[in-house]
Length: 253
Image (cartoon, rainbow, N blue to C red; front, side, top):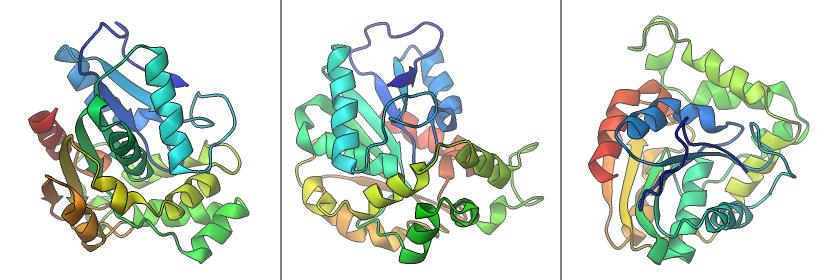
């Protein structure tokens, strides 16, 4: 598994932060946050999931297998305890890890999440055929109207096209496998009951991919959870509202 941990590498932090990307993406979506925490003396592990970014190996087609792969990697680095942040599909992987090995996870942050995370048959069909339309839909629905050209607060950024290009660089079948993993993860609500970590959900008011009302049952099933809602934000909050997301992460990590 390829990881980004900064130029200094891992320094033995007893609570490293693991960042997990979403469908069709890679570790680069966490660059701002990784650099911030590295500058503040934290160990950071931003992963490229198998078959994504610079990671070799076959694609994995379930949240359970992706989580197991991550935990095995952490075992190989003798990392016993950690905090984990996941976006979209990555949030499900983070939840799975925090539920099956709750004693290892200090803090759990789920960004742009919902359970179940069902995917429409139309989108799955496009992705199965590696039709570019699947990326178009995910890109368009991944942002609020405020993120369109000329209407966002991040100068010099064409956010939607940046995400589109990132997904376009993904290998064949990546989008389909990722979407299927999300859609087939049916035990998440029960798994949430096993989590003992400090838990935070960051939801977007205008998230069209994982609407905030679809996190209601998930929130109810956690023993203890904090919820932050970002007004006027879409699904890809760490790109659309990076400063606010960073503020919320700093509070719990």
